[in-house]
Image 1 (cartoon, each protein chain N blue to C red):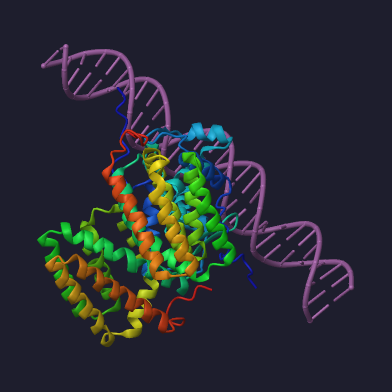
Image 2: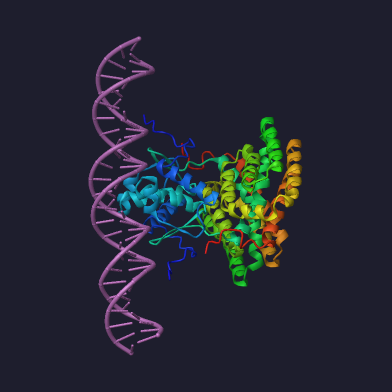
Length: 230
Length: 230
DNA sequence: GTCAACATTAATGTATCCAATTATGCGGCA
DNA sequence: TGCCGCATAATTGGATACATTAATGTTGAC
């Protein structure tokens, strides 16, 4: 009897090596270590990671499918340029899908997670550094979706948070600590709706939260604050 | 001055070779030539396409990111199994994002496209073969979104149509020519709302269209009609 | 007779090498 | 001076060969 390994498990490690490289590059891009638009040479990365170019190529392809890298055949790879139009598009999509994720999630969410969310909510208000805020805000929202039993949706959402990271950072810096009170109020209302497990209300609140941010992004001129990429 | 090729253009041909292989495999999977769950051997494909295993691997990775293939490290690749839960999840997502795509699209849509859509709508009603229906229905909906100026969204939607293709085929066979009158009525109403460029109405109609289909998929037992994949 | 451990086999993952394509720099010409 | 074309260099794409890992079948002991 054939008992070959069943392809069920989310063994998301592809070639293992390439996956590790992709993880590292992804973290670097999100941290802002690579300027958008800069060229990425396979051999250079291969040398840095102590491998051949093949795992590097696989990693770059992964990142391309996530929208973090752009590949041009026979030419090379570039860190994806920031694009305000793409950012706005993604926010419009997020306005539709994240309320779905949240409403599905709060139906299954355990009390420990709710407590953890409340804690994150408080930490966000207490945060003073932009990088801390970004990290906490991301953790708050993504954790709030985690109980959703919709793996495809969750993967999509995380991908969207990644590709718009530069804009969130620029926007956070722009509004500063003073302009954050709106965000805090929105978070508190969302948090309370989660506690009540009010699926209708959370959806409206979250949609407003994302939509308001999008309109702010469109209104302000972030061209000098977001890494250029031209 | 460096005038290196700018990474703007949607040169979607990646390694060219691997992209061609991916296209062919994708078409084969959607056409139902490969049973879900069957193992795919790199060497076998390499021989069939007259290449080495490397372009094959890249193609398989592309298809994995699209959800059509499952890769397990150091083990192998399988045609993705059909999964009714995943299918339902995707329909729930589609209920949210396709109305967005359509409402954005009808704002820019030219008259020629509207005429083409009406033509497709009529062809769908006249279709007698399941495969014809699937092809026309897909073309109708995807064309209706095309003017949306939201490339990321459109890519996502097409990917979702691909991963649920088997279920649409099974469902179409199940309901047969007689059960299609609901679909035709829905299409007619959507078509009319497109003509009026009524963004609010199309969204409701399309959401209902997708939602009703999802509920039907959940209600019926398609386990014998959709390729098993176990 | 069943289970466990080991050797064998087959597949994937990676490194090295070669080919094809593209970017660059020089030279000629209008 | 500016532009076009060709030769050169650099980089990526692909093929072959090797290393590594997982599956398989056998053997042995309990």
